[in-house]
Image: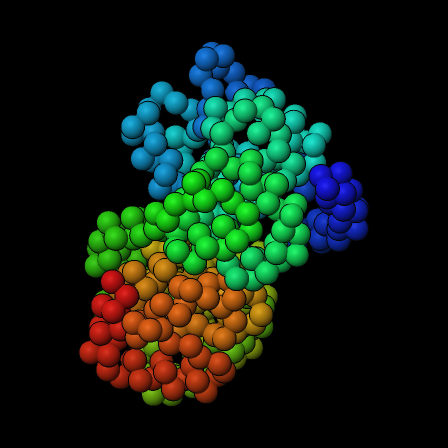
Length: 406
């Protein structure tokens, strides 16, 4: 099965490579890091006494880096002499990791899950322990760790119903792969139930909650809100809608709703944070097409102010705390079939949350917050306008919803 998996992965990479090259030539994608993705890490990054083997923490993208950073900071406080190596899959994830984890000995790209790349990477890093955030199942990597007797743990483990359905089709193979993992620290009972159904060893599966709760619950939301409003030059009394992690096809819907809301709330401000910052020019065009004045977040620290109706977030790694500056939050990837995004951060900052019908990757979390009346599912422009207007008119309802999440 491992051979068949590797052959299939090679075929996928071959089929995918022309698209990557075209995007790189157009400037919408980047090719740097491919040497690292093949497991070729600079030896200078890992020059250390042989006895000091690092802990390798893998975080696929920006969201997972947030959880990894919480763990890394606690780890270095307790074991300051033990080096940490952080790996990511995406360029934005790497950028955030380099900025938020200065204590890491190295930040690298995770190797493509082919035996040659995996063995080369493990041979260079020589980790004493591997920690995978969420539930990253890379069969060849996990098998190589098991063969080398490198313990592996899943931290902040999550397995959505959508991912579970996909893995279930290859359950006999996935069961073998899961035997290579020594510890599963899952977020919820539902996550644990799914990973057990796929064949994880029951003695290794534990429900420990969500690491991100620790970061948000220890944050001072009022101070964060004040800090962000000062940074973005927003009056303390101004009402703000923060639409985070939006995907193509969603910004137009949000902007149309915003246009209608401005008829009743003329001073309303929209903070729009596309999931992929490389789309910022496209989103900027959509804003201008509806006649709004927009400013990029990166321009504001230089003192650019004046009349603005929309702030575009063209930076990465700031959204989780930026929600604190809003009156209402909308979580993207949910009006279009992208499976949704994490609604934990805005909810735990005490902000009422709106999301669309496509929350397949966060079914349990979205259902939980709806049951607590801390979140509302919306379906279209009219629905967004109706729910936002109700919340903007009545601060008591907003506060009640916000408190219900906390």
